[in-house]
Image (cartoon, rainbow, N blue to C red):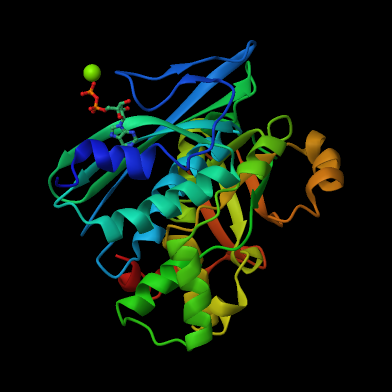
Length: 324
Ligand code: ADP
Ligand code: MG
């Protein structure tokens, strides 16, 4: 008998999956039954990856599985949530068991790591499209939001930014980089690490947070807009990897960090009054947050500076083209 939809669900999305105590019924009924922790708020995020739009045939199936979960977990991280459950809507052009093996493996690895349980989904035939919905919790009233930044707050970015953008540019042959740097940045494009632990640690420290999916400039812009504030950012403080700084000019590296997305780091603000706690608790966090500037009262105004003067690089001709 041919391998059908139910064999697929059974083989790749039911067995071998971790179990959580709060899943009363996961895959296998019309809907999932879940136990909610008391005094919590449910945090839900959905993200879709479409073949030919968000990824191409070059991307290994395992990476697709990892990434579609990672981008959702990153949204939960940016809210300070603890991940719990995940559902998957899978649209496939054909039954491709090799691809499904890789995809489900990548998905399961990251779910296992964060103790996030696949609780259901949907399977349909059509152009390759993956939609994941991730569910998590925060203690009531503690979610990190975009609208809490205040003038005087310090702005931080975790890890390093611009690497995934460099990988994409290298893949599209817009820039030439060494094999070792390419391997490093491609890992970031294909297997992003959502800052789940950092997000939760920031719950009673940060005044606002967002994950960087579209580039620092755009995503910090969302904080500024939601919080009705401005920002000064010192371009020389942006956290850049060696792979990035050794692959392009210093000014281009800054442009990658500002304009390219897909790094899934967190950008967040810390009030002066919480800075002592932040420095004590998180300065040595593995996600290595870097202070890049300060929130101002000028609504929606992002000032990019070098030595407290406006950064000239933003106006240089051609600077944006690689990223458009
Ligand atoms: P229904 O017809 O009632 O909507 P389905 O036949 O679509 O149910 O799904 C049967 C069960 O398998 C449900 O529990 C559903 O959540 C689960 N499921 C279907 N597709 C997937 C998938 N891609 N990943 C995980 N669970 C899935
Ligand atoms: Mg049904």
